[in-house]
Length: 532
Image 1 (tube, helix red, strand yellow):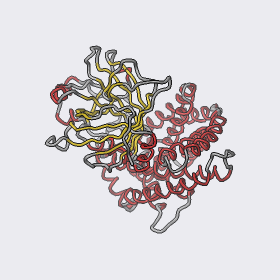
Image 2: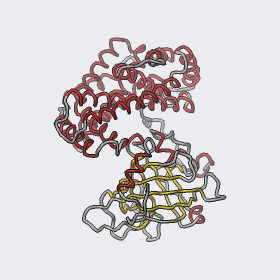
Image 3: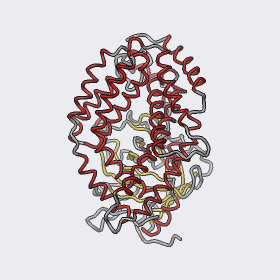
Image 4: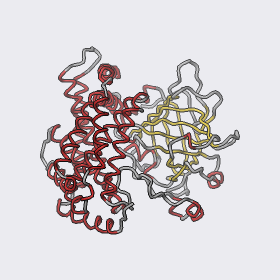
């Protein structure tokens, strides 16, 4: 039950007028007039389901580096400090569409009240499955004191990689007159998928919409913009103008060049991120090999796959140890209040100690292995690549994933699900490589395979955590290992249900039907492709 509270309140009653954008997330490119003021760490959960009106949420806010003296923001005035330690603010917020404003309006009535830690914990339990975490940084869009303020949200957890900006206004006229700077590149104000309440239950970032300005036909921008460079590397995909052979060779080179950069240069500054990036690039390249195997031959494919698998294995200890820590943290966030916080902390700290010991893994062997494969890429016989050979490689991966899809009543083991996940990731990576054959269809399908692989990946991480906790119990009286194992099993059951539902959609076609449809796309696409 919520009682009256005397803790700090941000804005008891107000009208929220805002516009929301996807962002080019590199402040260094925004220009000197854009200045950072302060940052918050935010965790919020929704009491009401997505789409509800009014919308009710609870939020915990903690300044990431202390409030900037005298700074005002769209969150209201900075909370009083009172202590040297940054204050934690807990709020209950209700938002409602303004009558007559229309369902896509940027204007909503907002009421915020401060609540106590006990009240927050009571309501947080109710938000299970409808939560987000993000780092919010505030920027002033110009040198003048009255220049607009923009808050940029960098999401974590399942929404990691999503970056959104919000600009709030004093009135509707100011909102309508606002001209977004170039780094606010796609407006999503009217896109309900990007509302925080919808994101909280989405489990992953939504597919990026087409720019509203592009949809409206900004002829002046199009006329002045330089033509796309045909030699610009488009990443892990066969570009629209490339032949299959050229695109596959370039994509493999790009991935391994990036892996070497991570292991040789970036690892000194961010070892965890560098190892994760390198491993991901190696997995992508191995999937590319499976796609290309009918063209390059079994011997070459096996040799290169073995070299990349060996390189990845040398990096696995550090990454796996970090993942266990992150898995416990995710459980603590999802099931806050189900166990004492000290129980999660004790387990997390014990695993973090192991992660620190395992992180100092030498990378020299991995670097040598990756460099060897990279040097051999020019000699891969990819010139033999045809639509038919690619369909053989892609079709084999699809058929394997289709066959491993658990049936009704099956109780797959953790190992079986992990093997299925490997084939799902092949389908995802193959979809990325071939998406330009029909982007409107193949891109969303690749995204769904990605989502499925994430569900299965979370299950695998939990299974590994269970094995760790039962194989080497935590020697700390505060660690409620049995209680944590119950939560592991509960979450795995939820993930399995979601994965099976999505898996039946991803693999709805028979392998033959899937290949026939893809052949029509590839034939049309490659018939118009020209070598670069």
